[in-house]
Length: 282
Image (tube, rainbow, N blue to C red; front, top):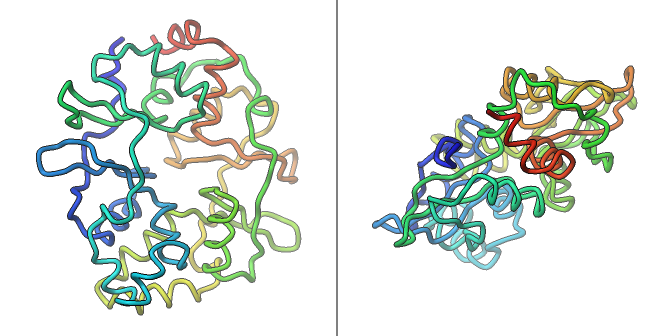
């Protein structure tokens, strides 16, 4: 198999695109966590993530710009002012085993492929590997790879409260609890999606309105869960069919963990070994 078969997207933002455009693209569905940023000739210059945009929205980044220009104008500033450096770059002819080894060792959710001139050719993300594992029995239990360090938010919290917690804890999603029971899930993409749909009414007003809402107005109420003793293959099937980035793990009605796309890809590569994982994807 060639690594090109695992490319999930060859779409990129341009360095001069406004930050609000990147926010709209990440929040607009299609499972995007991030965008590669290129200059006009396609050379990779950086990466902008949903978490980085959320940091700007809550005032953790670009505070001097926001103070000087206000949030409206800040979100219309070019994305290159906010992007991170792109580190996970490989030549487009890299072999699959090298990429899987890198992902497993670093728990990296993506790698960027470029040609010899550094021009962007595509991004390889967890979803490409999961699609090859769908329908397969992995031989690993969910509890062997799930994250047990749980960060949650209460039903009475605001979207701002949840945003701050996600940024502080460096997570993309928070289960929402009411009376100790899970009643929903909020993600960074959920918040950016609200912004993308409301931006026509004025960005700054939309942001303040969204952040003052209760999480129950924005959260996903349909919970997609999996049992800890289920085969990881069942988690793969649910992730793909429900088009979600992570699953809550329940033992009976108790939340005991979360399993994400990168948990599955990275930890399966570690446990099974690169050669066996490649064989499973054939």
